[in-house]
Amino acid sequence: MAAGKYVPSTNITMPVFNRHDQTLKTIFALRRNTGAKIILTVVDNGSKEALRNELIRLHKEKVIDNLFILEKNYGISCACNVGWQLVDASFFMKLDNDMLVLSGTWLEDVFSMWGRYKYSTVFGPVWNSDATNLKVDTPCGTMWMMPASLSGAAFLVSKKVNEQIGYFSEDYGLYGEEDADYCMRCLHAGIRKYTFEASKMFADAGGNDDYKSINFSKVDMHNRNVGFGRGEGIFALNLFLYKHGLRDLKVRRRYVIDSVDGNHVKISEDQDYLKYLDALSECCDLFNACGREPDSELTEKIKKILIAA
Image 1 (cartoon, rainbow, N blue to C red):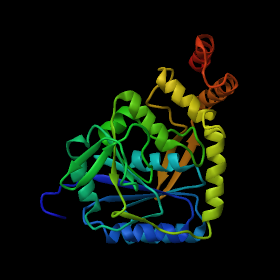
Image 2: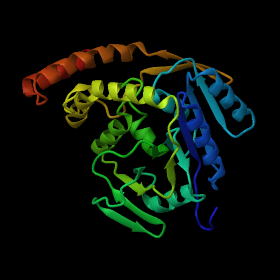
Image 3: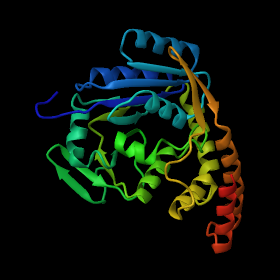
């Protein structure tokens, strides 16, 4: 670690669902090119046996610090939330399993850049160095204050913010708007968002046989969450609810951890959440039908539906 660059306890959680080659490349690059001490937590969302066995081997060899295996794919949000919930740390990062770490001082540089803001804001990567948002130049690089969302590929949040905002929303299914949703909740809580130039820190791990099927699933789920017009669907409804104070910014969790047996984690669905999800679905139909601009009468109706749930 470079002199004078302090890295606090950081739980880097990697949600995994197949993508065998990319996942292993990402893990090895992270270990090879990270000088700072980290806690690497991998949460497997029901991957194929070959990858799962590799992850178990890497955990036994202490390449992976914590390995949690779910019996099926519960989605990116759930997997990340499990990793954050079960491993305490000062900071949590969601790292996608196709992000190759390039720089040996990347994490030291991230925390040095973030500086005094790190306990009260969230941080994420950007690959467009021509960003026109408010620039903050630091001795370790430039960061930008972001008005809206951050990339979820290497999303970093402090325990302090996590305690205030909670976890990723599990409203969106297997692939969703969890990072954008989190950022919008931060916005309404007065928590600022910063982004850092990532082109010298990360590279794409490249495609593999799983890529096309995963990408199609993501596109399909995205269309259902945001609507083809990008102003409807449950994501748009949630933005409306957060903006008008109709939903708690510390959202309910859909999935509950029942037990942890070695690497294996048993999950169940919270029944109260499912009732709330039904109410959200009813509100979403009303929201979409009104042309995305509910009047006071419809807003009150939506409020009553959610309170009753």
